[in-house]
Picture (cartoon, helix red, strand yellow):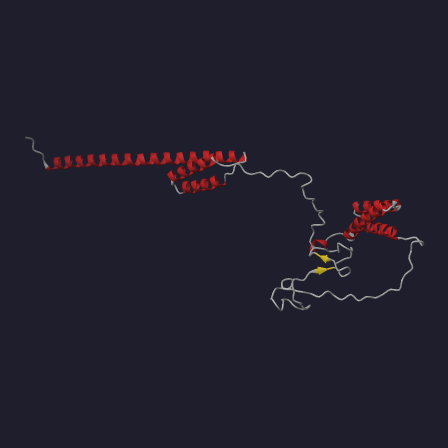
Length: 270
């Protein structure tokens, strides 16, 4: 029988403890290594699934498919990936892919024909009241006169009148307007109007005695309850509705819009 002294017993005990520690450490490290490998695998799988789903979404969108619902799910997958929740990110990407596979086609409106397309307004017609102040002098007046004379010439020509000279002067006015010589365009346009309004002595009727008729101002009424309102009223005295003041031409009483600088009926400045 071999007798061991205290030092040898201590050394053996130390070796046993060391062996146990090494065993436990290796087992723990192996478990951590396995978890790390699984985590990296899930991360790569989620990344690849999201990237593939995004590529499919782009392709289907270019083909005219409605992918709005799938895009929302892809955003959820991206957020889960940023939170390191790779399994949820992968599942969301797969769900988005299933939605993409059933994505419907977008309804595309039929192209409008030439007859259906609305006429584009001229840039000057879209200007507001503030923009009108920036226009060159006599631009709007000359354009209005030219358009009015063009219609008058067509009407006079239809009734059998000789309007050749008026046409020549109108062409000169249009040329001046195109060259942005608005003063000359206005002058030529007024000349056309005078030519069209001239009457021969045989056709001039004797001037009758003028009768002055006083036209009363139209009574203002509430648009909601038709109750009479005064000029200084802001709200209706009967129903309390706010009073809407409409603009009208001071010469012909035609209704004016907020952006009108000239009357569309008589052509005078509003």
